Length: 240
Image (tube, rainbow, N blue to C red):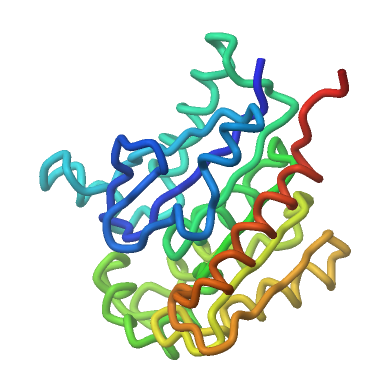
């Protein structure tokens, strides 16, 4: 059995495509998550197109409206369990990562289960209420949650990873662009503060001159290196 890394695309209506380096629509996650290097070191990679992903028809794409962290999360875990059941993935060596909405799903996942030994989230939404008030994409949040925070207060709070931060025990690497207007840096800062408060192992890296995803080659290389080293440390290969 191999250690398994789950890579969740952004969007949420993006799509993970079938190619060697792990491309996706909208933001190329292979720029920050070195899939080829992970594979070369023996990691299995699961890149699920969970409910809400594009490419499977309108009904599937809209299936996570008012349900972020619901059936999309169930889809993700069903994929993990399938790979375990067929003997491909080691249930004791699981990691999860994602950028943007994938970052949201990463934070949400480790707040719901402690099965993952390491996590990395980039440009991730952690607090839907403050996201609505500070993001240039505030209308994306209200569109998916079908209302504003004062109209859907309970839903905003219940589906925010920050609300469940005390449940997170998985070591977390947080990466964020200093000039991100889509998912403001404060989203990363809020989760970072909460994890420190509760004693969860966490590292946070802020990339200068960067918006929603780093673009400078040296910053992308740094993000790749950190992600590779993070999972080597927390989801290691078995000793021979």
